[in-house]
Image (cartoon, rainbow, N blue to C red; front, side):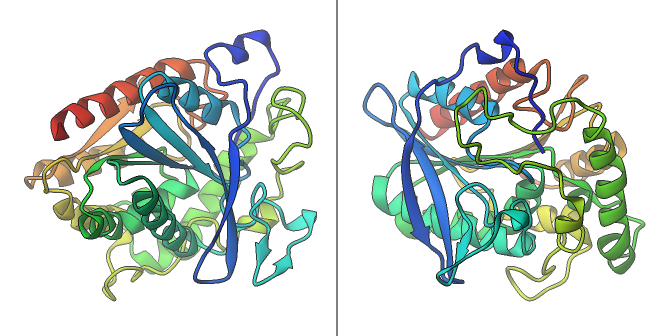
Length: 332
């Protein structure tokens, strides 16, 4: 979710220009919209970013990331999730405006991440960086092993992966049975905690007066659109085995990141109502137990919307870009 106050401060260090639009046909019939910005110098990496629920490529967070990438030789590609932004058409049928901000499950988003990554590494033959926020981060967790394989098959490095504020089903507690958590708790927690907090703020989504018109984000928060599929999806997305929520899935995926140049980091704010510090501690414990290059970064006073409406958004982005630069140096 993105909630942006239209103040002059929000425009600092932000790319003012539109990217280049393109549409990619997915194997399940979805036509996914991407917006691409090229750097000022010869590119040395390509960065694929997926936004969270109720957003689009038209957010301040996206434009801040673009601004950081253009001077660093990184191609930045942001894509609209299905049923978001300009990704409204499946099998030739366009969904109506009332359906904007729905989605069909994290497993669908995960498949799209993999297919878009294949297209990008084929197009650019450059090291790949992948980032995700909120609902996309849960899908990103599910797709991790396949993203590693995409880069292996293409013969390009997977530089790093950034999982930003995974929503509750992405951090299910160890004692909670999958059936109860995934079918009830994730929906109730997201709908009642995150969404209730969001509706208290005066500017719920990009108002269209900052980045231009027409606004590609949903006009209203339609909680009913996402409660059925908000963050759940096929638990056996990648290999036919069921894992205890996304924490166990991530532990399994972490082993796949122990290849030269591949690393991943979960980023979450200490004031994010949907991501408890206890669950982040569980992640840290999981990664510390193995030889994984996965890690967790807790951002003090950070909220759920780390990239756009968080007062410290630019500081968080500076940290993330520094991490990306470190990983690019690692792979040479």
